[in-house]
Picture 1 (cartoon, rainbow, N blue to C red):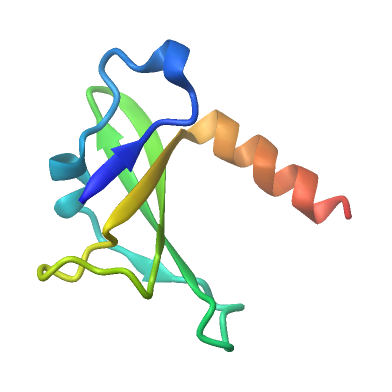
Picture 2: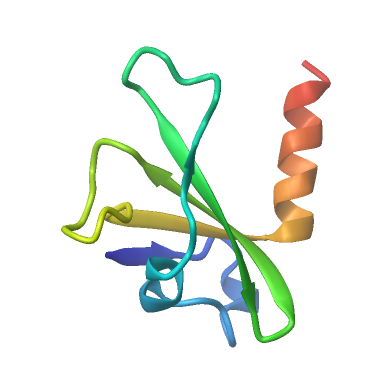
Length: 85
């Protein structure tokens, strides 16, 4: 599994793929066409991150093969911007 951090200036101390492997993943309730994403919440060194992965690309341990990691505040801003649409 690889992890990408869309906030590179905050890369120090960001979660690794191994950290997300232990997270509990949930599939989006709005995914019905097989084009699904799943999310996981991870507390990492006192900060909360949201991981986003593709349900079609899994590792043998059932975690997403690729993960985007967002700090909780950044994820909240993204969700708020989508709800305004």
